[in-house]
Image (cartoon, rainbow over all chains, first blue to last red; front, side, top):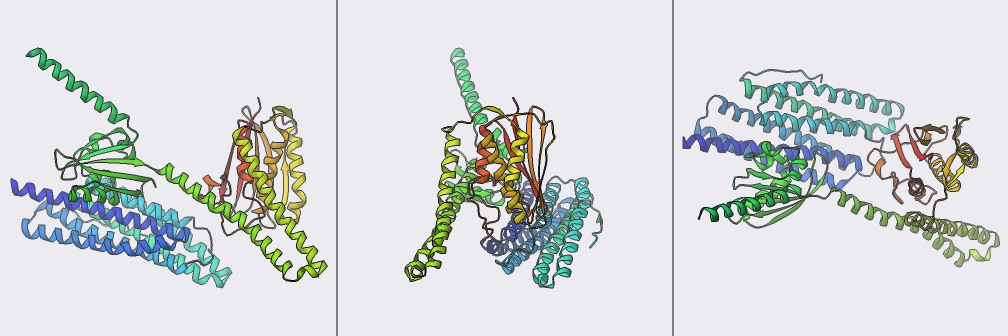
Length: 222
Length: 349
């Protein structure tokens, strides 16, 4: 009895650490977009520096999970929880890398004159952050239905990505001198599109955690 | 014995009620956690701050409730060190600035967290900072010109009469600009303090609007912008200070001309809506970023800091104060890259 209690305490701690990591990643997405929008190099450098902490957090959670498997031999839903956590933290780390990528793009852009006001890119960032937060809600509440529903929202990010891509192509076609600046913004939009896709992977893991079945819920357009 | 016990229970019960009332009426969020970071108590302010009910929060971990790693970090530092810890955190969920103080509890290994929403305070701080930086910028530009012109005159241009005349003309323009700024700041402060009362008399609203548009038509033409007005013939008379309402219109139209590229257009329209007169100045200009929109009526606030206009940066602030002194409202809607609509409404009675 005592052993199981200890095991579940550990599991709860791990789940809390996933939420901590999720919040770190969510802030990285928001702050890298702020850096791009405001052309604020200080914020950009802060996001780049913080990425190491996100990676450390991933390794720390991974180690705890491995230790728990090795010492407690969990089964059934406990084992599924740990397997899901291992997968979710991988996705979170990659989303963090995409945010770091956008902060690096902000540094590259530096004080170059802006090509256009950023409107759809912040929308993509906001939507991705919102999806990320809700995917972790679904994880905490073991809510497979909410996770399934969330996957469909990726279409919104895909549409915005389409829109940004087409618009920036127009800029490049009209004036080849905008090529470098437009390409950088396309990278930034692509990073966000990939981040939203990774959120859908988290949702699939939540469904697996609840149902025990691996499901490809919705194939991304890209 | 029974009576004493009863008194004691009543006393404890009344103390508890008092504590509970104090806690629930506090404007600051209070969260109490145990040594395992699990929430044991949240007050009403904290429930609203984190959009949870006490029942949802109870026995959940603090990070699960607040979903913010920086807030959680302050708590963890306090739990580890058993010393008071504090921090300032920008939340990503509602983009708020929260001040947090975590204090270890003496009687158990838990902590008490006091969380204060400092969003408004931070906003005002940023308004004050921007005001100082903007006013110094506005003063520096004409002063730098004056200094350069005076130095050039001293270094020999004074001997060339035609150049000296030209320079003196430019110096006068700069001095006029400074004087205008001082006048406008004075006007703003008088309207704000109520020292310069707003007259309340009937005036011809349609005529005032047309007159303001007519005064700026030549300037719009020079900028290659088409300025049009659409005023219904049966527009009723308005009540207020005609000269000042015209000033509002001039400021709005002048602003629209400044931020509309050649080939664009500006339309001034008016209508009655409920018991109000509503006047709008719509342009096809560069628009205003959504983040800047709430701040454009602040003194010297400039959405595009790189764009140095000819104005003093006080036009919209003056317009806002005049309209509000009439008991009306002023607002702006805008889509970046497509244009803006500045509207104000004045009560008709």
